[in-house]
Structure formats: C-alpha cells, structure tokens
Image (cartoon, rainbow, N blue to C red; front, side):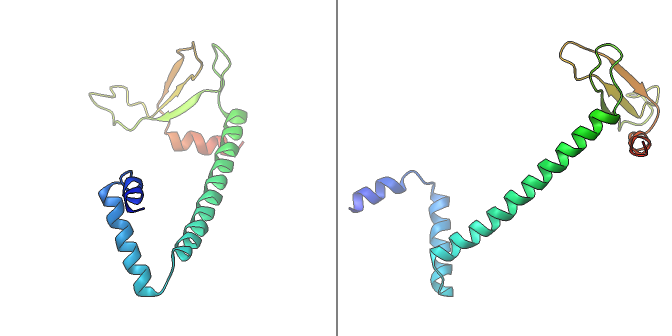
Length: 128
C-alpha cells in the first residue's frame, strides 16, 4: 500500500507536496478539514466564473457597439480597429500621430493615421 501511495505522489512536485504539508498543519491547528478547503475553493471558483461571465458579456456588448459605430474600411468594408499611438512627436513619430485606424481584414492592409487622440475619438463615438 505504501509503495502505491508513493508512486501516486511522484506526479506532484516537491513544492506542491510541501504546500500540502503546510495546509495540513494549518487545518489541524484550526480544527478544520479538507472539506472546509473544498467548500472555500468552490465558493471562490463560483465567484471567479461569475466574474468571467460578466466580463465576457461586457466584452461582447462592446464588440457589438464597435461593429455598429466604428468606421468601415473603404477597401473591404470590415470594421476598422482603432489603436492609440503612445509615442510622442519625435524621431519615432515624426508627424505626431495619436491614433491609428487599421483594418483587421484577412487580405486588407488599409491603415489611416490620425492626429486625434484615441480617447477623443471614442468619446465622440459614444455620443452617437
């Protein structure tokens, strides 16, 4: 029986086994059980899943909004992506561009640079 257990424990790293020993000591000292840990874990996983679902829903709503209000590519009709340009006017940004409209279309290379701030463009689109 001991050999069988040792064989199963070998799949875990030494750090993981040390964490298990530490957890076991804490549970014993607090008069708690592994069931309490499972309950704690399940509660936290539920909260994480709920948060992920909310984030996914918010992302989907933003994506739909962007499809509706974002500029369309003049070459292929796809909704353009808007990217902020953080480099200040200088060697890397000679014209002082502040945002870039680029097409995510598979075979489209359309790009249009803008001197308008990313935030300014988004605010204007939100007012639509």
